[in-house]
Image (cartoon, rainbow, N blue to C red; front, side, top):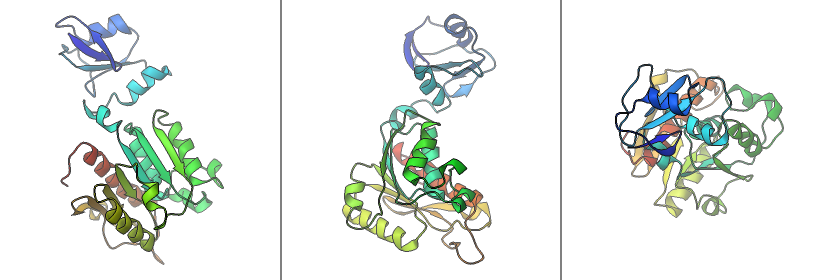
Length: 268
């Protein structure tokens, strides 16, 4: 019977159990994940089951690390996610959070686009650290991502996006995430992408400032391949700043929408 142990194809006996396999392959493993779920009682394995064996606190080798990173996924997800290329336009509160969530699920390639540097006020909502102040955001975020999932391919583009370069910049991306602060830049990017790449999916955001209700942030399918996240009203303004909790909620709406598109789950 064929199963996968730490993502390697292995032949085992019919009716072998997860704990029997653990005791034979990696007896000291104290975490056993079967098909995305940590088990605490033994189960009989079936054809094509996926089992990951982890020793708590041990730094795994490269092969085991990638297997561990995806061990909690729903079976069948990783193979499809790893083939996807996602472009992120803007690496601030939205873009940096989206990138981290996608890296954690094992996205194949991230195309990171921003012209700016990390400055101290960014740290209230963006996924950078004090050591990154003054660095290009593309460089700083690539540094963060490699310490989360070194198996994600990262391409950096340090540039200001406008009509002259948007098409060339995102020609390889399957999905583009709009993550700008400025409404004019948002509109320019989305309109250009819709015009130049009618086949690409776009996931944009508008309205996540302040500390209003979590539940006002929603994902809407505005067009066949255009999704918009946010509450449509709470833009950053005098007396209404951008803060980590709601920005991260919106960003993870975007990240989950990207994941659903990759998995061909298009409805909201």
